[in-house]
Image 1 (tube, rainbow, N blue to C red):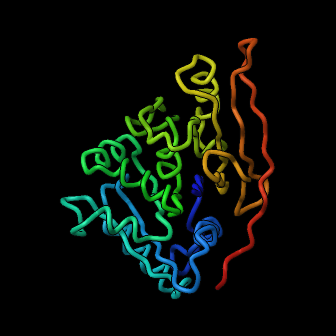
Image 2 (cartoon, rainbow, N blue to C red; image 1 turned 90 degrees about the horizontal axis):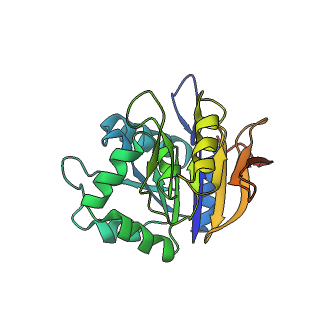
Length: 243
């Protein structure tokens, strides 16, 4: 029962546009799936943008030809006949970024919260970036409703914490997150700088990992005296992937 909740995924490449980065590689490694891992992408938070899926298949073909890539699109209708069988047949499910509020609404229409929880209990690694990090938690901070950051609740709550990605790169995330935890709008939780991922086994944090230097994970919690405390977590640096 593994979840990798991240603020990263692909690595930039001036020639090819996107390469499979260390955090995606780590999610695949967590599956311990052997020679031909099955890895499925969900880009619901981008409205199932076809360009996002094209980038996925191109990057996998170039960097991980051993992987059996797949995707699940829900717009305008599911691209597979049996969504549950499709997702439970994967070794890793990677969820891309975008609007977490829209993602959660569409997932509920199609029964994905129950299916994804079942997949998690069955040993499928659940992972993702940004919206694909926040969705596994109770809630967090989001720009889903416009440029001004707002709280979002109603996450899948497989992890009983709050979550905020892009903690170091988007002005306003840090103070808003701390205020929401302090006010009790969000429970205590975890934030990640860009390039950092949190690996949970069950609901317990195993470690923080990173694809770059000088990035951190953060524990944010409310103390009994009413103060909000932020504690830095030093991540383990992941090796650069093959290729």
